[in-house]
Amino acid sequence: MSEQRPRPTTTTDSGIPAASDEFSLTVGPQGPTVLHDHYVVQKVQHFNRERVPERVVHAKGSGAHGFFEVTNDVTPFTRAAPFGAVGKRTPMFARFSTVAGEQGYADTVRDPRGFALKFYTEDGNYDLVGNNTPVFFVRDASKFQDFIHSQKRLPDTGMRSNDMQWDFWTLSPESAHQVTILMSDRGTPRTYRHMNGYGSHTFSWMNAAGEKFWIKYHFKTVQGPENFTDAEAAAMTAEDPDFHRRDLRRAIDAGDAPEWRLEIQVMPFEDAASYRFNPFDVTKVWPHGDYPPIEVGRMVLDRNPENYFAEVEQAGFSPANLVPGIGLSPDKMLMGRIFSYHDTHLHRIGPNYEQLPINAPHSEVHSYNKDGAMTYRHAGNQPVYAPNSYGGPEADPQRAAEVGWSVEGAEIGRYANAHHAEDDDFGQAGTLYREVMSDTDRDHLAANIVGHASDEVSQSIQERVVAYWAAVDPELGARVASGLGISNGRERVPEHAAAVLAEHANRA
Ligand code: NDP
Image (cartoon, rainbow, N blue to C red):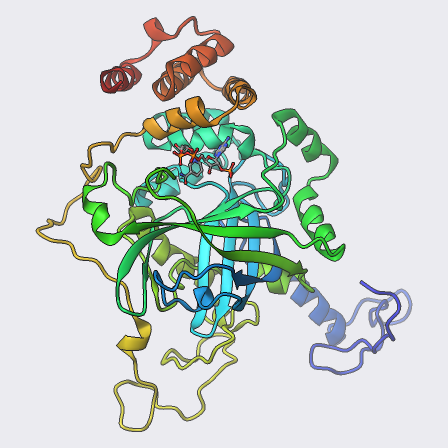
């Protein structure tokens, strides 16, 4: 905010000069306030309507504008507009967020971080709505609401509950990989600038010749990954609850534009059926040894929003916003998200939220959707139905280039997994613990788990916590058991958890 610019006259929202910024219209100096002081009445009414519903998840966020620049030719894999010729730049907006907390929550709490990107391409908006983790807690959208409820607040006390979180996680073993990352120091990133972003799901790409590929996205922070320890994060929560927001804002204001390098992994379309695990399972990564990363370009965030509400709060991202050359995959979490995001923005912002400047594509819109609350953009006398004989827009399947896949001999049903040889829940979490983490990472992980599971978690659930981590890695399980004071855990491990352990031991 600047004190220097010439001060305009205050007006009503209809543009009429206001008589006073401070004094209501009253009957004499001690008299009652009159109702026909429409300016003050308007202030009161509008104030009462200032908030739109808070996002159910990712409520507290920060955003910035920037661009994506192609640095490597990936046109052999996709015809998608933002990944065209080397040197091509596409304007972008990015929003980072915590997940479970509300709008006023502290930035530095242990939580995954949202990493939502909007590319304003000449073929419409491309949204890649990811996280700072390459995997997710559950692999089926039917469990998402339950998962989020477990991260939010208890129905009676209105407080968050570690007991509820561990109850859900230990009864949902597919969460182990993501919870390993969450409980490591990556669960408390130092800043938004110092974390990676991932598309997490598998997507499909199609090139100009119609050849299809399965794709994973990785945005690697050029600043380098840096995290807080649990103690540092807790201290910052007390010192500055808006620390991540402030850091991003200040860095960009100071000309220190943060940058991420986009790398992709490419799987030939036909590999998916015979790969050793289901490549569309969002609880798993594709090991780099199998599908090495290929550089695509860089994302730079170099402009702060001028208005938080208009640009960050009203920003609406949707994984359904794909542009020609990019498609979905049979990932069940992704399928659920395709419906969910647009739906929540219709509720939260309104049926015409895509007309707001932050959400409006920079390309032309020729849609047959019309009217509704707060509509602004209209199509004049364009016919309101298709097909029509009066020159209205016509769909172009060639230009849309939808990416599909075939499902042969499949029966409608409810399936727990896809029956690949290695569709297990604990393997990749164990690999992360044993082969990727440093000794310090492992020490911090064990201490963070013990600290978190010691905080008002019942003993029966602590016993399951031990079994869960023993299934990830027996040595980690022993460290957690000892930290929680549950001997080695085995004799007190309940039946469900013992079965999990036995299954893991058989596989090993
Ligand atoms: P690699 O050794 O090739 O890659 C390991 C990856 O782990 C790197 O991308 C690194 O990314 C990341 N990483 C390093 N430390 C941590 C940490 N404390 N928490 C989370 N990620 C970390 O191994 P593989 O590809 O064979 O995968 C082995 C394991 O690494 C997987 O089971 C998975 O848990 C983890 N991982 C794998 C990723 C993948 O896409 N293959 C992505 C991220 C993690 P960075 O540049 O950030 O250090």
